[in-house]
Image 1 (cartoon, rainbow, N blue to C red):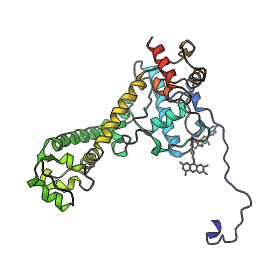
Image 2 (cartoon, rainbow, N blue to C red):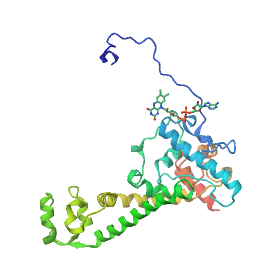
Image 3 (tube, rainbow, N blue to C red):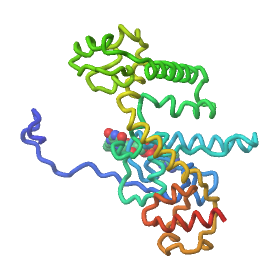
Length: 299
Ligand SMILES: Cc1cc2nc3c(=O)[nH]c(=O)nc-3n(C[C@H](O)[C@H](O)[C@H](O)COP(=O)(O)OP(=O)(O)OC[C@H]3O[C@@H](n4cnc5c(N)ncnc54)[C@H](O)[C@@H]3O)c2cc1C
C-alpha cells in the first residue's frame, strides 16, 4: 500500500510504530454514575475505564462531571437530585455506560450504534426532546433552548392530530397521487395514512394542507413513515422500564436470596447492579435468578 504513494515507491518498514499501552481499571468497579465502588467521591471516565474513542471518552466525562457536581451541590443544598444516570432507551450514552458496567470487557470498548436495541427511538432529530429536559433540570442548558423544543413538539402534535383526523376523498386527492406515481384511492382516507407511502411526502399535499415549517415537516414525515415500528418500540421500552425502575439498594446482601446460582451470586457481588434491569443484562446471570432476586426484593 505504501509503495502506491508517490515518493514512497521504494520505502521499506524497519519497525511498526503504533503501540499504545496504558493502565485501566475494570469498569465493573464503578457505578453507572461512574463513581468508584471502592473509593467514595472518585469518578472515572474515558480510556481509563477500558473504552476507546473521542466520543466515548467525552460521553463518560459529562456523566462523571454531572454526578461529581451533584455530590457537591447535595452537600450544600439537601433534597436536590442525588445522581444522574441515563437509561438505554434515553440515549447512546446510557447504552455505553450500561454496557460498560454490566458486561465483561475483554478488549477496548467502542460504541456500535448499529447494535443498539432501541435505535429507532434514539434518533438525532429527537435528541432535544429526549435529553434537553435533563440539561435544563441540571442547570446546564438555558430554558430558552428548551422552550423552542417544547414549541416544536406541541406544533407537531397539533398538526399530526389534524392530519390523522381530516378525511380526504378520491375526487380531491387522486390527481395528486397520479402525478406522484402512487396508486389511486377509492375509499376516503387521511393524509397521515397516505404519508406512509414511500413515494409521498408532505410537499405533495401542500395544495390541501398548506405549507409546513421544515422542522415540523421532518418530524411528521418520520412519525408517519415509521408509525407502527415506533409504536412497537415504545411499548417494548415501557415493559423494559418496569424492570429498570426496580431498584436494588446499594450494599444489598445477595447471600440471603434463596435459589440464586453460585455463578450469579458471584457476578452480582462483582457488578453490584443498581436495578433489576441492569442485573438481567449481566452476562452469566440467568433469568431464573432474576425471578429469585425479584421475590427477595419484594419481600
Ligand atoms: C494514534 C491514535 C489515533 C487515534 N484515533 C482515533 C480516532 O480517529 N477516533 C477516535 O474516536 N479515537 C481515536 N483514538 C483514541 C482516542 O484518542 C482516545 O480513546 C481518547 O482520546 C481517550 O480520551 P481520555 O480522555 O480517556 O484520555 P486522554 O485523552 O489520554 O487524556 C488523559 C489525560 O490525562 C493526562 N494525565 C495522565 N496522567 C496524569 C497525571 N498523573 N496527572 C495529570 N494528568 C495526567 C494526560 O496527559 C492526558 O491529557 C486514537 C488514539 C491514538 C493514540
